[in-house]
Image 1 (spheres, rainbow, N blue to C red):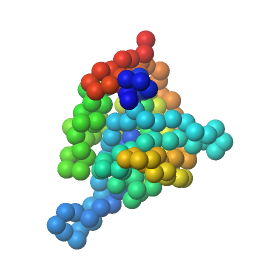
Image 2: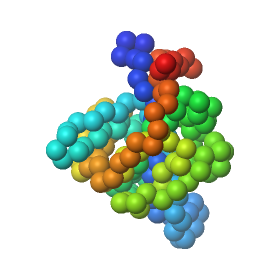
Image 3: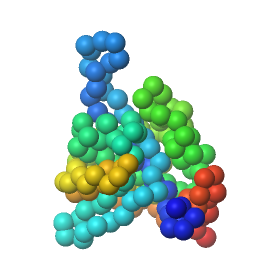
Image 4: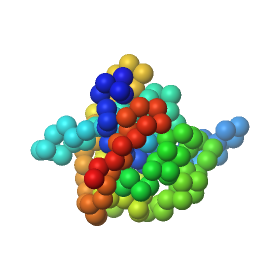
Amino acid sequence: MSELTGPRQVILVTCRGSLKKEMSTEIQEKDGIIAVAWHMPVSKEPFLYAIAIGKTRFTHQLIEQSQSFAVNFMSADQKEAIIKCGTISSKHIDKFKEANLTKEECESIDCPRIKEVIGYLECQVKQKIPAGDHTVFIGHVHNHKLNKDKPRLYHITKDKFAQTR
């Protein structure tokens, strides 16, 4: 399907949830990152942004629990970090550390975002729509910023990418 509908800009979605540790009653806070190519603005007023997350993904569980997420627009020079975040799970690994990305706190929601971004959107889930093997999370954007204009990375299919400029 990607070859037909692509290329699509790749973003990193960050989130946080409080989950029970495996084999324990202890609660731990867990931050997650996932690479996403299925995303889009869906309303100007109010400002709403949609992301599609696979129901089996750990990030899906964190967003379901926290009801918030940050959309991080990355530059093409972050390709290796983006690929790493799209190929390993946050369940047992700190993707910020593994991908050499700097975590900073969102201003309007309880969620991390990535410091090395072109821009970001801080979103509170307003609606979720089951869509086959994915859920479309529609977030109300409470805070956003464009930091810089740099070439962006686009996913074509499998391990094929393109970039602007």
